[in-house]
Length: 211
Ligand SMILES: [Zn+2]
Image 1 (cartoon, helix red, strand yellow):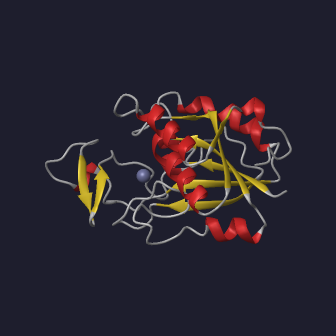
Image 2 (cartoon, rainbow, N blue to C red; image 1 turned 90 degrees about the vertical axis):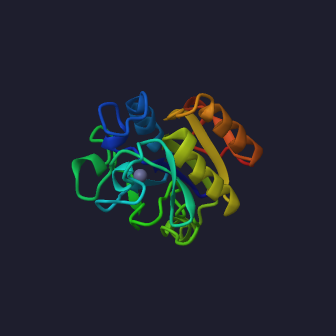
């Protein structure tokens, strides 16, 4: 059985103290470090924006962070500047054990479209290469961890399902933003309805859960 663990955006700027901190986001790190040992294939995604990315509120005069605006025809939540390429904030968290990470897939590199999913940008115009990479290695089952539950974890799980992967989100190895109260709960419900399995880290052993 070929299964992969996908680490979503476990980066400095999303940790407490960062400009786009996910509450308690750092709590996922030790849980993820233990999980990586149970997988033969581990990959990571990395939010990686050019300076002046169109998702940054700073690029929308008169608009504030967390308002919804439009970017190249798509509704876009405006974010504080974060994960700018080649800055420390964009790096994977130093406490994360990356020794078993075989590949890192960058997203959000196009200034005109945001990318929550590790597979495609938000307009589904371009892929990151993750789908092809996994298929070339015979991966049919993915486990997803990281931040944020209600944005990039949700979008990655949604695309994984639509691409036909058996998909599990390891809930205690994820943290959410909950910009609007209930967003995380709604994300979990949406994932369940798509056929995503919601599990806890202790339930993930070294063998496939099957489907
Ligand atoms: Zn971003």
